[in-house]
Length: 487
Image (tube, rainbow, N blue to C red; front, side, top):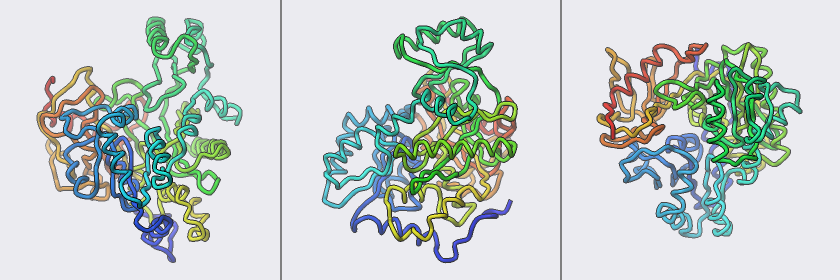
């Protein structure tokens, strides 16, 4: 495939010109920062606006590179321990010494600061209130995100809009029983009302599994808490990316998602990675329905005031797409997608328009208001895989993997050269090791990430295997190279 083929040209403006439009929309002296679970996700915006600070969970061997460029607040810094990167990890850290450091930094001086988070937090919202206009959060308010996190409301909206959802029902946990397994089994899914990354989606294949999970969830949520009970549907999972800009939904780039991969996932629905080229193997009719529904859901959330990037997850079962859930936030694939958009095209990226929606540069973009319609035009090809500690116990890193470009040679990952971005990958046989690979001696919690692998090829195999034998070998050899031992 020719990079950039089919991409609209922009003879009158360069990417730099467009970026200048955004930076000119803020007062002189204003600074930008990014807040996310992973430091590498800041690449999403770093090529669009200059970043002065970064807030993330992780700190690894690429930490000094971030430190060199900006002020880097990391939950893991100095701990010699790899935690599980979750929103709750950030929230907990905000309540301690790190939160106080961030508060002091963001309250210094009179120049405005703009925080670009992957999602809003109560902590940042409170800081913005205290700052009296000097701190602005470029994200949807917490209450809007919380509203659209509701999987039950999403399911009802999908049905009202005439789109398919997995056969099922909503039931209180106290009423969950064999009748549901008989109706929706022999294998069924129990989904909590709120959740992400597949961690609140539960696979039930027996009466014993149902009873055990019901008791666990009652203890966690209460006997009256509603859950979705549905039939398990096999097939490729698709995650779409959409954008609300100027009050309208626009389609960006879908990808096929991998879950339950050995070496990457702790359970059947644990997110493992994504592949953009694989989406083109989904039938044209299924793609049409997926994109139609993504835009329809975009209309629903736009009417309620939602802005910027969002995503919708589907399962394609027997060539028919079923809507699963809405992701009202910057996505876990946004960083990869943004880098691929930059490689494959010359137009402003989806993230550019996300920032434009919040910065509102005004007349400077009026002549380009139709450009978001071109977002999904270029065909992207690239993948990411999160390699994790999938054992139930802590492990210790015996050999570190330097961030950079690798190739598999004689069954071993060989370091080829330094690199920090996907654009540093030169061919399909290379992989980028990124996302804060931990130093030797670091203790990694169960489900903690060792690193992320990125490449410009496709690793999709289809069927139950999901990924190719070469991709499975890649997971195995990189994990083996870490020389793990019990901690």
